[in-house]
Image 1 (cartoon, rainbow, N blue to C red):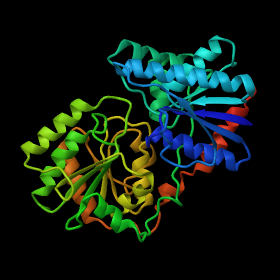
Image 2: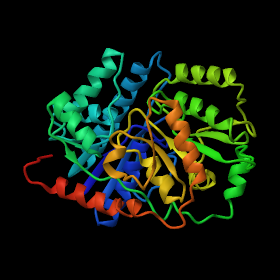
Image 3: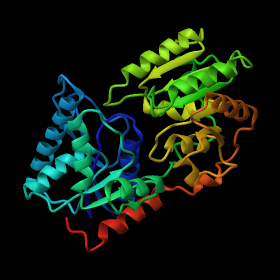
Image 4: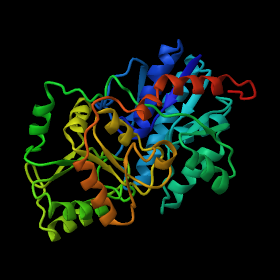
Amino acid sequence: MKIGLLTHSINPRGGVVHVLELGRALLDRGHEVTVIAPSVPGQRLFRKTPCRLELTNTNLGGSSIAENVRRRIDAMRTHLGALLRAERFDVLHAHDGIGANALADLAQQGAIGGYLRTVHHLDPFADPQLQAWEERSIRDAARVLCVSALWRERLRVEHGIAAFQVPNGVDLERYSPHASPGDAQVAKRHGIDGSGPVVLCVGGIEARKNTLRVLKGFAMVRQRLPRMQLVIAGGASLLDHGAQVVAFRAAAAAAELRIGPGESIVITGPLPDEEMPALYRRANVVAMPSLLEGFGLAALEALASGTPAVVSRIAPFTEHFSEDDVFWADPMQHGSIADAMLRAVAGNRHRTVPDVCRGFAWSASAERHEALYRQKEFAY
């Protein structure tokens, strides 16, 4: 089959990683895969892909998030329209509202017969236009997929949609407990001094990542482990998390915790993709007590790297992790997060890849997607 996978960004986000890994696994199964993403001229995808790559020419600089989203939708629609005049795709599969709205426009124009939409998670938007685009991207899809039972149920209850669950995966060649010669240099470059245990958060400072309560829990743990560092890695996003960043910095100052290389808190910002495995291995614990996730891929990547993970005792984490896989926390209580961090730091690192990681393979995800793509009642 000739498959087009649409993603919303060239930056390292969970949904983008899903697209790239799914594309690679589908390619391994003999399909022709094109990854399509919006991009400003001169930008590159954060990770190399063996798939054909189409980056749209997107002119940003709008006065609002909604305006920039509209520009991304327009750029995706224009780029896809040009591709469709020259070639035919058997499957067009969007993993976000931007690509899905571009496909919905093309379906209305009669340029395509339909499209798939994978929901990783849904953000509630205060802006009515953003919310309308999000709802349309799901409503107009010929088929909706999701990566957890949590979101399958929420789509059923809140949107009246019978979604199909597909597995996520983790790359066990990329993420491994075995140290690499460059791990120490990566840690040093980001100001991780190595004098105490390291708590790693992945994805930047966001409300749904529960970063403020992680900070409060970290401050409690520092009373017992004064050399501990909190490292917040990544964070490239289309959404505006400025208010959360301001609140985080104010809370850190109130707790007398300094931010910067070599300080108690290190904020890396977006960083090279090849450095993430080293950061996972350097960490003593990965903290992911999120309030909202589609799957929680970073926790799986941490475990594959031999590093304990602290996660929320809520779905979707409770769907695929057992009592022995992770350290559980009540995400609404920073004291519970602190306790889980302490237990994780005191525990032993994994010397081998845990069984839970081996249960999630991208090859199995690709096989499930392929079966759904081939179902005859779905006409593209």
